Amino acid sequence: MPLLITNGRIITATDDYQASILCEGETVSRIDKHIDPKSVPLNTRVIDAAGKYIFPGFIDPHVHIYLPFMGTYAKDTWETAGRAALVGGTTTLIEMICPGKTDEPIAAFDTWLSKASGIAPCDFTFHMGVTRFDPAAESQLREIVRRGITSFKVFLAYKGALGVDDRELFHTLRLAKELGVVVTAHCENETLVDELQKQLLAQGKTGPQFHEPSRPPRVEAEGVHHLMTFAELTGAHVYVVHTSCREAVAEARCAISRGVKASVEVVLPHLVLDRKYTEINGFEGAKYVMSPPLRPADQLDAMWGHLASGEVSTVATDHAPFDFETQKVMGKDAFTKIPNGIPSVEDRVNLLYTHGVCTGRISLNQFVAAASTNAARIFGLKSKGTVAVGADADLVVYDPAYRGRISAKTHQMATDYSAFEGWEIKGRPSLVTLRGAVVAENGKFIGAMGAGRLVPRTTLA
Ligand code: URP
Ligand code: ZN
Ligand code: ZN
Image (cartoon, rainbow, N blue to C red; front, side, top):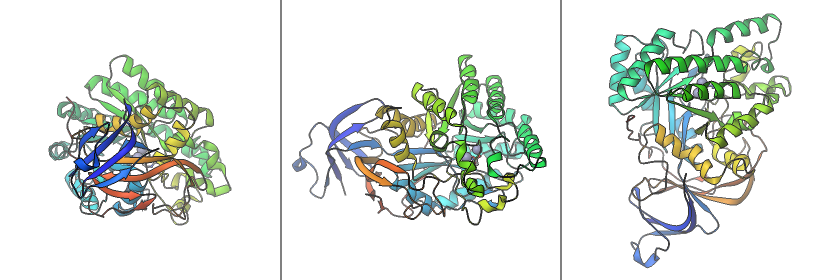
């Protein structure tokens, strides 16, 4: 059914204006100051967006849904995570494919695709994890890029599990450069993490509050420095995921100033949660264990500053959901065994709006750029990330007057806890469309499982 959205304030990464939007089929067909409802097809649904913002559908460029990790599996499926994303205003997810070191890349790609295709209610694509690089892996990676996956993912952390060695890193970046593919990277020095973990455990420091001291800012900065050296020598475009501290951003800045092509991501937990959360109620702090870890409060201020200055391009979630009662408890005797991750795919847009826009830390345009447009640009999602004639009709009608609270009792995600239990949100999507179909309204999912599609993507110019 065509949709006419009237009286809304359209916010893109660069513009802010009042207009009406007509969506026909899957795309935006007309944007005009006034569109006469009599001039549109008879069966058009008219939505009055007076007092509301109209944002492009938000894009989360870093989520984990199907994730075998640390001896367990992440809790969400594409049904639960996709529904949560849409209710929260995120219409496209980019999931990390994380194969084991001995898995064949094509088999891994097919597995991850099968978990989303025909099931996901939102649009999706993937970063192809490279956990091994040899001639067989290389030819399969070339095939995966031909199938439209134009970004890779490497881990410089997780020694012996997902991490690549320097030879593999070099060849992955060289291949990426040749194919015009962006390489996303988890940057922490795996040897330093391993040694610091052993040292802390030997001292009897086993609780979740010791996770951060095992991966201090220098460990992360060292990882970024390492990646930048390899990016410089191969000419590849790199994207540093979940950057949590000023030291890491400084390494990226330094590399960019000497010509390295690099982009920096921050994730929602590193903007709104500090290290103190890992200290609460004994083991309760395990809910807040992720890597890189939550940092002291002054680092959060620094990351907001880097976001406002444009040094950080994107705000993702790194959604990696594990139950507290049955999964986080695996690390009761040693923080090194707590499955890493904080569920947040549902909350990113509302918390970024509440803690970023409402506090004046970022403007409305910066909010849209960081949560949608920049990810579309960096990862070649040409039909997404803005409100424009011809673009996919992925729209978020956002009500800034809404007030509510986050709770695991009401969230759509599958986890048994919320890291933001009881937190206030100042605003939420009142209506969300995915390629012209209304998929969420006032906190309720009304879309269709399986309606999501693999998004076509371009390579770098
Ligand atoms: O703690 C995290 N970040 N868990 C998910 C895996 C990763 O490193 O992105
Ligand atoms: Zn990571
Ligand atoms: Zn991740």
